[in-house]
Structure formats: C-alpha cells, structure tokens
Amino acid sequence: MTAKRRFRSQDWFDARDHIDMMALYLERFMNYGLTPKELMSGKPIIGIAQSGSDLTPCNRIHVDLATRVKEGIRDAGGIPMEFPTHPIFENCRRPTAALDRNLAYLGLVEILHGYPIDAVVLTTGCDKTTPAAAMAASTVDIPAIVLSGGPMLDGWFEDELVGSGTVIWKSRRRLAAGQITEQEFLDAAAASAPSPGHCNSMGTASTMNAVAETLGLSLPGCSAIPAPYRERGQMAYETGRRAVEMAIEDLRPSKILTRESFLNAITAIAALGGSTNAQPHLTAMARHAGLELHAQDWTKYGHDIPLLLNMQPAGKYLGERFHRAGGVPAVLHELVEAGKLHADTMTVTGRTLRENVKGRASKDREMITTYDKPLRERAGFVVLSGNLFDFAILKASVITDDFRRRYLGEAGHDNVFEGRAIVFDGSDDYRARINDPALNIDERCVLVIRGAGPLGWPGSAEVVNMQPPDALLKRGITSLPTIGDGRQSGTSDSPSILNASPESAAGGGLAWLRTGDTIRIDLNQARCDMLVADEEIERRKKDGIPAVPESATPWQELYRSTVSQLDQGGVMEMALKYRQVAKKTPRH
Ligand code: FES
Ligand code: MG
Image 1 (spheres, rainbow, N blue to C red):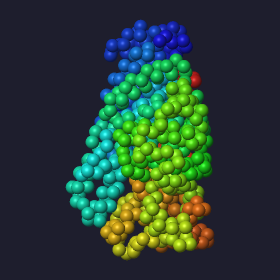
Image 2: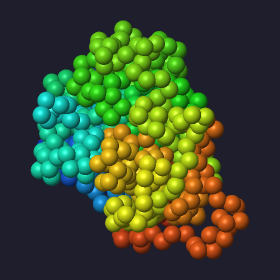
Image 3: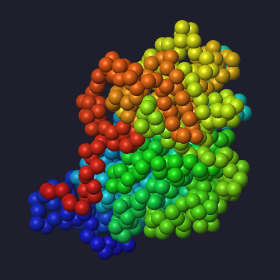
Image 4: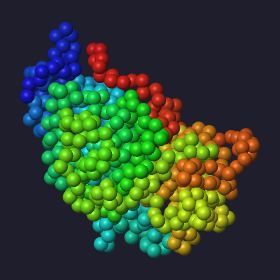
C-alpha cells in the first residue's frame, strides 16, 4: 500500500532543507539493518510501545507478540520501530504502582512527540498500563491502536477455579480463621497464575482492556483473548496491519474518543462487574482527551445497569470462558440491543461500535446473560457524598445478599446503616491494631483507613478492603463495612466505600473523624456522614491533618505537587493543557 499523505516522520527522514540533520537521523538506524532508502521511502513509521519486560510479567507476552505486530506492519506497508515504556507492575511496585501511571504517561508523551513516529501500537495488560497509554495517545494525538496482552489461562486449585487476586482475599480470610495453612495459602495463589498473561479475573487489568475496546481503541474481541491462545498472535498481526491503515487514514484518538464513548464505558463497566479502579482511570483518560466526566455520570449511566458477566469477583468464572462466550463484543451486543449504548461512536476499525458488534451475541448464556435475565440488577457504582468526603464510590455488584441483610436490610432501616468508626492511619496502623482487643470491634463497626490517597500514600494505595479481626472471621463474619481515601484491588469482593475525595491528607472530612464516632451510611440518599456536631468538627481541625510520610524520591515529590484527587482522576493537572501536541513537529 502506498502512502497518499506526507507523514510526520518525513520531517526527519526526508528533510532536504536540513541535510546535515537528515544524515544524522538516517545513519544510526543502519546499525540494525534498516537502509536509508527504506526510511526515505515515505512509508509510515509505526511505533510499538513495548510495555512488557521482566519487571512487568503481566505484559511480558508482548515481548513475543511484537514479532507478529511487526509482520503485520510490514505486510501492510509500514516500518515498525519497537521501544520500551516505563514498567508498571501492580503487585510488586512499592509504595504503589499508582505512582507510575502518570510517570509512564509522561515518558510515552515525550517519545511519541519527540521521535519520528506516525502511528503507534499501544501494548497493554497490567492495570495501569492501559490508561497510561491511552492518556498519552490523547495528549499526542497520532493514530493509536491498543493491543491487549490478554489474561492468563484459568487457574485451578483442588477442583476449584481460582482467580487472580480474588483467591488472595479469600485465602487470607481462611488463613485468619485457621482453616488453611500458610503453605496452602501460597499454593492457592500460585495456582491462580498458570500461564503468561495478566490477571484472569475481572480485576482492573481485564476491566481497563475491556474499557479500551469499548472506547473503540482496539480491534473487536481483542481484550478477552487469553495470552497463550493462538488467536492472540493473530490479533497482534491484524493490529499491526490496522495501525498502518490508520496512519494512512489519519484516524487519531481525537476522532474516536468522545463523551459518548466514555459514557459507553461506564455502562459497560457496570455490566461487566468491573473494577472500582476504572473510576479514576476512566476519568483521567477522558480529561486527557479534553472531555468532561462528571461524578453523576457514574450513577446516571452505570447504576441501573444489570450485571451480565459471570466472572470473578462479582461472579463465578474466569477469562477463558469469557473469551469463549464472545468476549467484550458479546456484552456490548447485549447493551446495544437493550438501547443502553451510544452505538454510533467511531472505532479504530473505521466503523462504528454498532457495526463492530453486529452478529456477535453471547454463545454461552451461563457466562454472558441476556439483558432481561441478568445475574444481578443495578450492578454499577454508587457515588456517595457527605461530611466525610465530597465523593466516594461503592461497587454494587459485589454486595452479597448476606451483607445486604446484615447491614442494609434491618427492619425499618432499608439501605441505611449506622456503625461505630474504627479509624486507622495507613495500613501499618491497620496491621498493628486490627486484632487489638481494646478496640472492641464487633459486627456493628465500620473500618476506616485514611492517609491512603494520592497525596497521603503517595500515589493512592489499594488498602481499603480491610478484613475484619480474626475473632470475627472465626465467627463467620467475613466482611465489615469499610471506608477509605485509598483504592482497593479490582479483584476484591469487598463492598467498600473508597476513592474518597478530598482525601484526609488534603483536609477532607476523614481527617476529622475519630475512633468511636458514629457513621451513618444511607444508600437511598447516597450519603455517608459522621454524626458529629459541626462545632466539634471545627474544634478537631485545630489538631491538624493526620501526618503522612515524606516523599522518598524526586518523582514522589513532583507527583504530589501536580496530582489531583481521585474524583478528578488523579491526573497531573498541569498536563491537561497540552493537547494534540503532534500537530506541531518539534524543531530540529
Ligand atoms: Fe498485573 Fe493483575 S497484577 S494484571
Ligand atoms: Mg490493582
């Protein structure tokens, strides 16, 4: 295929007015075998943003897949150039991988802006690798297509499906209750990771890759293909091919991402039983695309949507069955048929979402139900506010019937709960004191954690899904209501109130809460308050904001100086004014 238009890379490789510079640009690529003739041919240069590495095992499959991406790019008439992105590994990065989303974003913006790249294949997988890539693609605004690495194969342990993360939360409760040994805990965790790929439950990784597909940033069916399946390599090849066509068509993120496509994502997240981390990430992606997403959008477009996907943590199964049932297109198909999506949104295929999912109904109704006979009604996030915070979310799809009965369904108090606050300053404090008999924690308590937000941690940590003290676990009380200004793992089945903004470290209401105060949660009114008189709150403000750790690295300090609260996506606020920066090619 020959190019009809002049690509930005030609400002490097066909710069006759800067012959000395052109010579410099051309010569070094020869050292791995490219020829000046190739580079001067006017073919588009397609970047492959390689997110896989030994430090990012969830995305490591991309190291192999890149070969097939390159073959697709070559076959379609482009020149591939692979380069690394900043690693982000959710489980291992201390103090939290959340610090790295904005750092990887920054790095990718500089690469896509400053090098001769005409279009880019964004390789994604582990939680934050997807939003970081999409945010950068929007800021730069060159044609961009997402290639997910895909989930691991299903994990099995003692004849039971064990899902990533979810098995950890379940096993630690059983360990605390004395039902399993430490070795059995470790064995179950290992069994949940049987192959290359990212988390195989509907945690943040699967959610964000499904979101990318819903937004129209990847080929239909891409996100759910398990990493080791042969279709994954085929998808890599097709994605490479399509990237070249998109370069020629100049199909950029700004032509794909609209407010409607983001509202579609909110609806899809509810139907999928998706991760609570989707809230800050989707907000960040929208804001970097120059679009507004309001707190009420989560309620308006998500709350009434039923749960259609039977995948852990909200349901039973894992990624292989999701893919076999039809993957994301089958869920979107159901939502389009029910009239719940803006189906005319543009996608990387050059066709609309409606066209992409045509004829792709679920092939397995146990896994992906019909809209009329869902697994659960009203599965989306509930947005709460009150004197503890202006904004927090609760994931309705993981509230079990038992929890509902115990906390929200007492006679005359439907959906309203009052409990005694037990306040922890960060997770060390929680670990040190949760089993302290002096706290007298019973089933009428609410566990609260603060100092876990973007400023406090720093980075916002996945710590809100606190488990009850061992004594309660032994009595079969497996969860208490929890509240926090941090996040929780997308694989968690805990019905927490989280992402509270503003956080304690920013002077939010949680800073003035004290152990022993009464907290009232009213889901009917979408409110969460401490029943403490205003004068008393004012008096407590004199005590100051609870202390948080100092920054330990230069990036932590820079991060803290620019970051917004989780309701605003935790973005670098100063970055938002930079939009479509590739419009102007950088000077020689
Ligand atoms: Fe990387 Fe879950 S820890 S995908
Ligand atoms: Mg996570």
